[in-house]
Image (tube, rainbow, N blue to C red):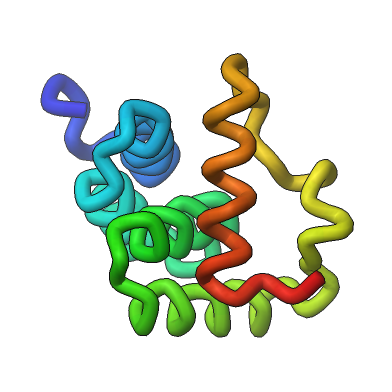
Length: 110
């Protein structure tokens, strides 16, 4: 990202960095990187997921709920029951479980 700060897909690398921080358990860094991605690409649903999860697991429930409201407005069909269609491919089952728990805490409906 430092070598190519004008990359038109910088938002995707910022999202990936946020996801990596989530997997490492650094939730504050996760939502900060996800929100950087959203400043460049406001409707990037994957970054909204990571921001909501990061906020929720960092104990920032109001911010998590606000991000979840934004995500549900963008994708009203999203539910815990149909997450398989949008979840990143987690290598470790614990990461997947924590991600789903974060979405649940943020207010994603069943």
